[in-house]
Length: 419
Image (cartoon, rainbow, N blue to C red; front, side):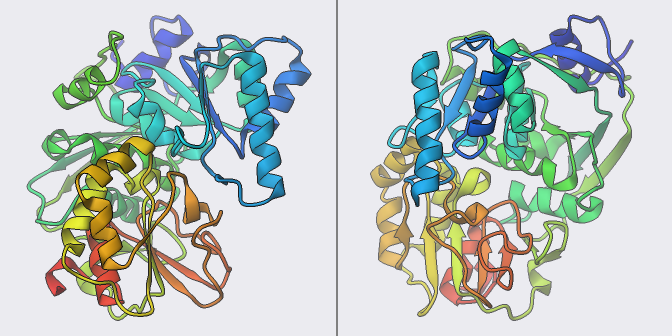
């Protein structure tokens, strides 16, 4: 029976010769992930199950990234609980402040994610790792507690929507624009419980950071996962970070898909998602006059080193608009260090930005950039729901890092060509 890459990964981990969309399977997990917000419930459930020991101390990753450095007593208590659990269970891949960054960046960076794996995480953007040819999906904290005890999970095999991107990208158009454009076409429920498979010549030309961005935002279209078949770019990224042998799986030519979409990219401009939805997208030429109070460059979506390079290239020799706040947060200590070595951080500081420690920061309305009533922010993050970054009467717009940097200079949402 012909299968997609997603179906092949799930069949392998369920010990079955084949699976079809809708099948319920019990699958073995290669890596289970939680952070300081979701781990407390998972730990509680794990303790209630009563196994005493996690299924494999080397197949669990715990990362302090959401409310760190701790912003209040409650967040400190949550981080302490996770820290103590990691110590008790001798969790090998526990990342504390100083060595931790955003989990969805740290795990691939540390070589913990390989093609062909099955990864679950108590965070909806766990789908990020699909960029490396893994099946990765977010689960509830309760489910993750059971996974930590058993190493297995029940899953319903999702149908796959294949999206083929062809043509040539315009200057300044990147993976963030492709996924925003796609979500705009599909809507936030267009891929409900489907695996989104990104393919085509355009995808094969994208660097890894932009592939991570696209897989990361599959959930914003309702997807169960996002995935890109591994190629030379994937293998080069993995080889630099892991000595383990990757499992290279490809979909069969005659595999059945729920839907196949073809997107010609030639006319796609940089995209901006207006509130209150990532699907409410407009090309940059149709944005109009949107004055800004804050710009945020960072997150698991666009806090990669290449993203910071792009933004710094725009800001070099320029200052941000008076009265505007520019917040930049590198997504990991390694990225932070490289950004210092390359002069990127100095460029941001010269432009008037404030630099935060590697963490999620204001993305989820956590801290280090909360919006007040009536304020508007342009952000390189993945969500712009009502109240996402602060007051319910604030507004969040989404863009790529190039547009974000240009807008910080202009004081309103605008493109690089306006500078």
